[in-house]
Image 1 (cartoon, rainbow, N blue to C red):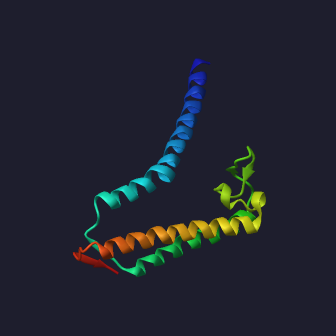
Image 2 (cartoon, rainbow, N blue to C red):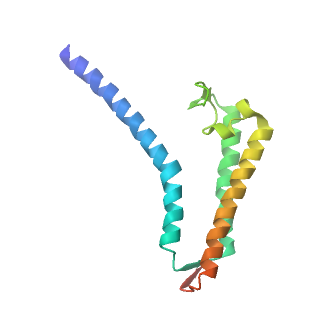
Image 3 (tube, helix red, strand yellow):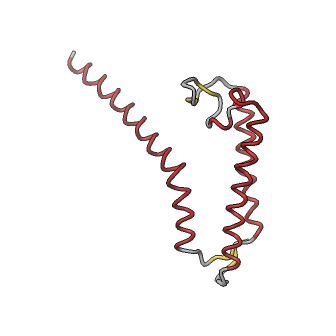
Length: 137
């Protein structure tokens, strides 16, 4: 009986550790990495001159967005939502059921514009830095 109890405790502890790890990784990915990227760019400016064609990167996030919205409309809710319920969407600002398509469209447009503005600033900084070490197409 003791072994079964220790096994059950080990399984529960493993799930708790995974849940804590997910929370830490989520915070790192969504809060630390973006600021570290900006700080790293400002402090250790790359010797690379970025081309304006680099802005095509936005195709990937927009494709992910389209997939996520289509998937969210066709699957059961599985993501924790802000209101203690479950949602079909991984982020609250994408939750069409909670906010409607108009609100979600405006939120996505704002995020896309901010992403393009930050990327444009990166390109402009590399082009105006006077460094012409090598070019990124």
